[in-house]
Amino acid sequence: MTKKLSFKDYLFIGSMLFGLFFGAGNLIFPVHLGQEAGAATFWANLGFLVTSLLRSDCHWCIEKLRCI
Image (cartoon, rainbow, N blue to C red):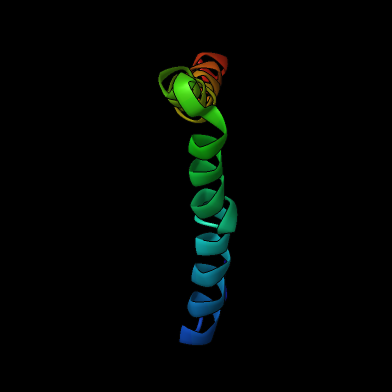
């Protein structure tokens, strides 16, 4: 990239990344999940963690292995 980004560009890109990684779904979905889980709160939390954390970690590991 040869063009230097302006403050306006950084602000725009920062707001887009914030919306991408911390959208409304991250605020609403866990609360709704807890309400719907009832007595199975442990399993709901475990499923949420597996799909959000381990899935991204597995993708990272696959990408690292592909580069080797």
